Image (cartoon, rainbow, N blue to C red; front, side, top):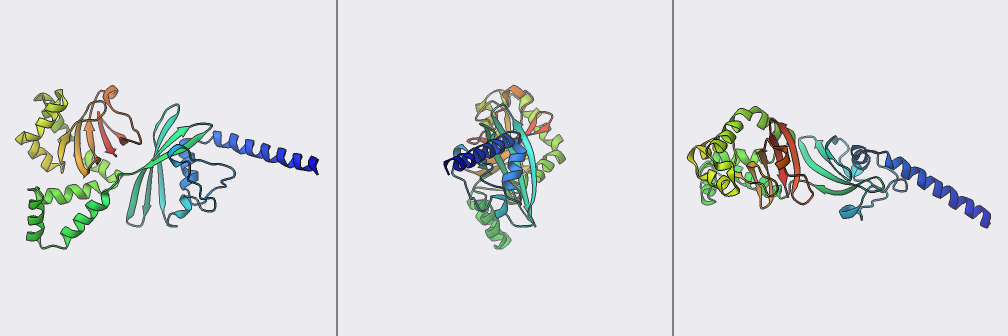
Length: 275
């Protein structure tokens, strides 16, 4: 009996080692496809979570199997370094969508460390819903009382904030020349010298006029590195927008605690999201 028991233990050990070796060959995107795919996977073969996500263990149902059956998934590798990678996951189901950013850490193989998305958007959605049920005069009065003088910009800016990453990217590309015009104006007039001068650019009448045309709330500075930021909007520290920095050495890196998305748009321009 002891002999047979030892053989069984040896077989299980070899099986576990084989599965571990198989997992080592999976790329960050393949790990995400396994976890968020519709087919599920065997938790005895691979435990793909660590760190912040180390307690995630559904056993009978994977994260992917919890999604609606008609969900469309799109995966995009945003960055990969020796021990860290970020994968963008776009989920679409009917007219609904969500954009997530999956942070992975390299241990024995790639593990999912954290999942991020732009938070607190429910407040923005609720505000637009409430405004849509008011008379035009009442809606404009309510926005004015909140300190916003341009009603149309307020509504359309928040619709852009709620848009998918794909649509936010397309909006920039359609208006790239106008964004570049503002960036050049800020640079040529000395506003891009420091954080303080960037903040002062929001008092410049021409800058304000151009920002209104592009549905941008304000010019902002970076919390890491240095760039000229064009913030669409957000709630507290959960913001989204674009920034301009042709010097790649001054572009901040993505992290699960600050810049959860930095996506190059070409010509020194980037789309960003924070948390």
